[in-house]
Length: 151
Image 1 (cartoon, one colour):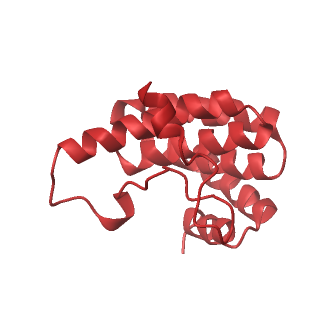
Image 2 (cartoon, helix red, strand yellow):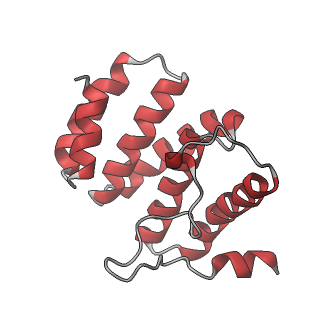
């Protein structure tokens, strides 16, 4: 199992410090600016956000989103946007979070208008674009933002 896989397992368990340490090593091995580096660095930004290290996380998340922008609509791009939404929401900047959430809503609409049989289950759009809602409620903190973005 490689470092990225180990880090992903740590993230799934909420073991943010362990995941961050693994991701720092993994990112150092990737060519800066490559898609693999961007995915790894975005994951590191998520860990730093969850650890409350917002000032360190922000440039990583924004920089990797810019690298992945060329692949708009891909699962890696969607994850980078989701991580930015979560980052800004956790910092309490809901308007900034909504700015990025709108990108997911627009991508959802584009996907709905373009039927495809090659989309995998993991790439299916969620109504809110955010899987990190209130535990047990079945709702995201952003439920309803898609209606706001239409106005």
